[in-house]
Image (cartoon, rainbow, N blue to C red):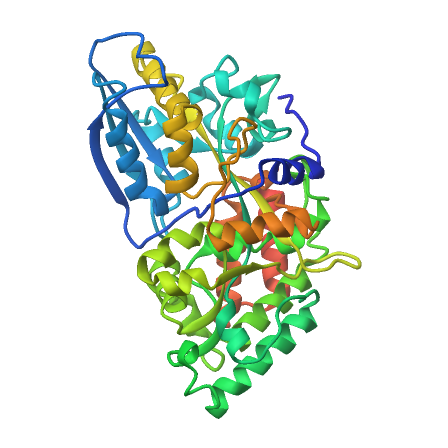
Length: 460
């Protein structure tokens, strides 16, 4: 397989050129959300056929479940002959596991998400060539590379996004702690230690923004996608120089900077409610615990990205206004903290669907990402930072996305490489091993060896 190589600078340039980024989260809630059905169809032009046709969608961004349903409802007026049903895969459920089950059962959806060389190998028989689609010419430089093979484009970029530490800035401001220029692990540890001391001595009890504060940080130990796929970029990105294809083509992983990950995890645990009972962190979830806790001011910091804004805003609009995104400590020589840039996923079309279904699916995606109405939905409803050059001044207005743009513009950004790792390695091997480390069942050396052995085995 000849796969087009991506350079580390490309996605960073893509972020800056579109002046935005947006939400990713492989899973969202503790349940799988089924968004129901709606009739609708395509771009600014009408569907090529008036015959009834059904399009099914399975997608990973459960945080836009409600918004996607509303978009499909609007699409009715464009294509009344098309029925669209959709399912958002949430919480600890890996969409890859769901799609593999669909492949085995012969029930693959018409539109689904995939990204990167490893997933290309898994789904290649189901990937429709989208090279002739009108949005291709408007995709920003590098944004198509992760699913371009032998010159053929197989996916429409969902969005780009920034991964780091989502912080309630007002809590730190009101506590008199400056977090404007945190660079090293020591910087973060010092700031978190100061807030932790104020929580414990009760000096913040009369501060309105801190009245519910029980801990500085939260570790989402129940979520292997948080521990694995996302946080693993702390040490994998410098090892593979921000290039997912270097990771994909490597038969081994050195884990050269893995101790940076250990130090980061230990620090986050030290200032969490589970500092004295680390096993408890393994039961702490994203949607059931972390999102409600930061939304209600019970914690000040969680590891997430700008995609978390919509969910926090639903719970408490005032808290949402006070959010910012800080970079994460990254391994590597002389490496300051950086935001991790992620091209979240691609929308792909099932090559084995009927011609009518494929046409309707392509029409819907074109409408969603290229019509004026669709662009407004993508940016202002989904909160995505698009990777297309024809969105004009459209850009998300929420503080997390603005922080992503600011970090990108200042150069405090590195590319994620986790989509070049062996299929399932991030969550099922490394993420699971980190869970065992947190609960005391594995030493850190055992985590490193498990990860190295799992990678080598997958590459045989």
